Image: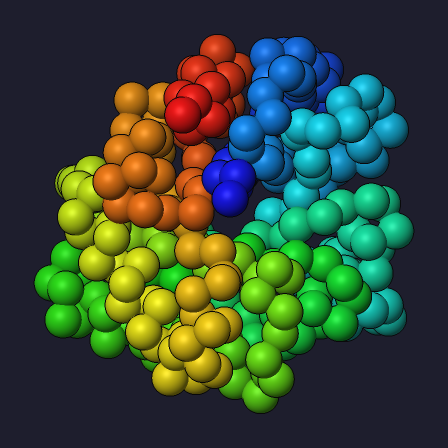
Length: 255
């Protein structure tokens, strides 16, 4: 199975010219990479331009960093799954720790977004995680997030949903962060898979992609993929440096 490498640009860069330059550099650098699926998630305002200029048929694909749960209507400032689908977006990140923190997103909102994305034929990248490094407390919070986010959802096609284990304590912007070991990451993924077995079944849980997000770069990406046996990674800060991200993709793609 090809690893899924997702770049989350967050609120960067600040100009279209910079966004196009970054996207073009990455595209040229990974155009011959066939052993990974790469998804770039830029800010909403750059999506149309990048999609229109996209000369690459294989990698990278484009995704969005969030969405709203309604298809259209009087919802000032929101972006619907239908709009993203119309643009040609494939993936959408939801439940990211920064949106839970700064936008005060709660599980019920994320649940609505997940249902809307699946209904629109888009692939949600659902993030779950905790700032608590105590594993018992961390896993308790993840269990609640997963159960609430997946509430009322009939078993979807496992190819259409991705779960990201995102320990907030390991993210580069977290004060006092500590980079997760492959052992910790593997334990987190295993816990998530066991929850999915209980919510759906073993077959579903073992087919769904569970990826890792938290200070991923070219130096540790293979460790997370090989030793922790993750299906992919969500890359934040390192994705804004084209040479670093290209190196991470190539390292992830090598046998």
